[in-house]
Length: 196
Image (cartoon, rainbow, N blue to C red; front, side, top):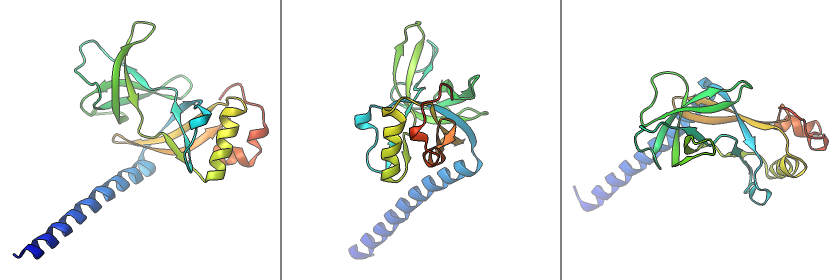
């Protein structure tokens, strides 16, 4: 095989590998959207200066940590597997954390941060959800940012479809309505609701 043929063969192999990786990510996301279990994640206000970049709304989740035992192996700054549980109001929260995927129930593969002790003396592991952006047109994103956080904090959450560790945002809700419906019904002019 000549040098030119070898380079061509290597180029083709590299191109096929890149396409396979991209296709795998797309397929996992589509499967999660079609077959995944739905969880509601409560949101907190985002600093309005950084609230969005371009055509998406930045999301800050009310949960960003999970309690961990003293004897848990070192999970700092690694990929971890976190079970999902629902609270009394139907919002998702993080359950147990492990270095291996659970054998049952719904779970997410997340990036861990540091372990710290909260004000109640409970060891917590900080976690970063992979879905922190909700994409919309630039004009709608600006209106959501202005209405949702700057004109009075409103109850907001996202629904996330979860399947085999992959989570994909399905929709953003404000005052109990999907965000596009909320905007269409004059949501920004309504006073903030007291409860979600």
